Every structure is written in C-alpha cells, then in structure tokens.
Amino acid sequence: MLKDNYFFRVYARYIEECEVKSGAGAYFGGLGGVENPSEVEEFLTYDAHYTCTLPSGDTSVSVTVMNLTDAKAPDVMHFIVYDARTHSQLGRVAKFSVKHSV
Image 1: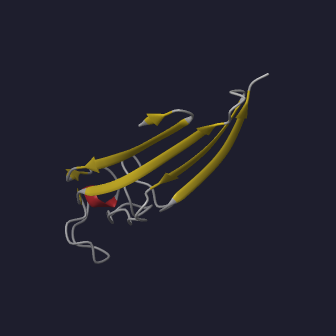
Image 2: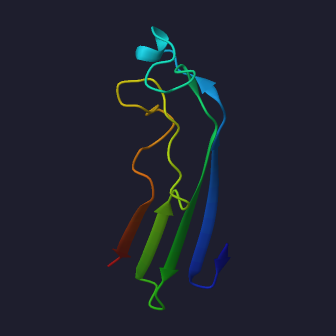
Image 3: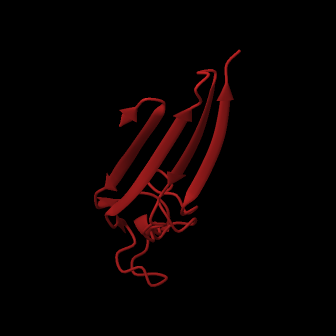
C-alpha cells in the first residue's frame, strides 16, 4: 500500500508439508521425538515492511519485521534440526535502514 510518502506491505509465506530426502531422517525413523523425521510440517509466517520517505525526497527510513508471530520452524531429523532450505531458526528478525541519495 502506497500513500504519499509512506509504503507498507505484509507478506504471508506458506510452506506446505514436504519430505526431506537428506540427513539422518533418510536413514533412521522415529529418533529424537520427531514422529516422522523425513516429513516437514506445514509452516506459515508473516513479514511486514514499512518505508517512509522524508519530504525532501532524498532520504527514506525503512523497518522490516520478518516472522511477525515468532513462529518456531518445524523440527526435522537432520543434524541442524530444521530444513534450512525452507525455514529459519532465528525466529522474529527486525531490520532498520536509512537510505540517503545525494
């Protein structure tokens, strides 16, 4: 959504249930309390981004929050315990930036 010098957007990121063909889950079953180690549960996160361009037009300030609800990535029987190709263990991440053009 863009209004005057303000821009706001929200993303919903959905990863459906899938199978992991690598790591310990490909060789062993039912280890470490993970019921089906080769299957990754579905996962939904929301990301938000807000930018304000100052009246001069030369400077903008942005704030981004990824994984707004701080959803935990589903466990997978893998040496890092999650599927790094589709998830992040960082949880909620916030970024702040200032951009100035001369």
